[in-house]
Image (cartoon, rainbow, N blue to C red; front, side):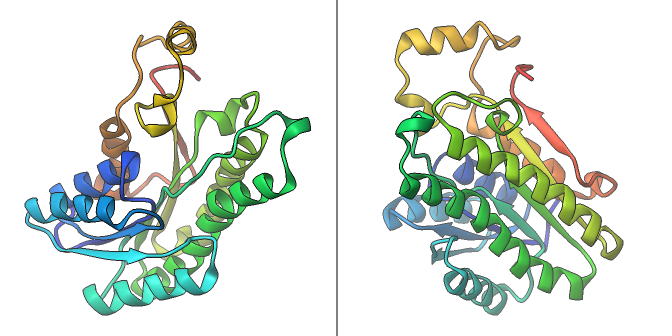
Length: 245
């Protein structure tokens, strides 16, 4: 259980981020719901958290902006008094073939998906070091492990998340802070909803469990990594992908 714990979940207004925030709340944690787009969607997440009997703080912040990230952590510490869990989930896509991809689209994805995780980890580590405890959970992707045509920027960012995770785990482990990554496969979210049936059928042939994952599948993995049961696990990448990898 996570009674008395405080978690920041980035990109928590929908999809995987929302599922993780709600699952952590169901296990006893108070949650900072980070969002950058729709406040209405973020409010929906907050209501689901409150329905679990936990407190929710909404903070709009672009994770690629260091000043906004710093302010989000300040507000969280002021509201809840501590920060025990960070889930770096915020991410965007700007898909295109390598030769057609603009520099702006490459930078946008790297800045949000990779730099954003780095900035949040720095702020979390400052506070967790004082507590001599903490859990950092980074959402990577099977695309960061295996690559994917048309997603050079996204795959590079998600592969970078893995390197960032492993390096931070070695730096912070002696202070009681674990750092792990989850590499989801194909999960039913807005990102996969745009795929046509032919593409979906092709993907299913590559998944031993013969189904797409749900956001809750990733949330259960995150909740485990945030728990005391995972206290001796750090620097790992857990593939939650139905067996694809």
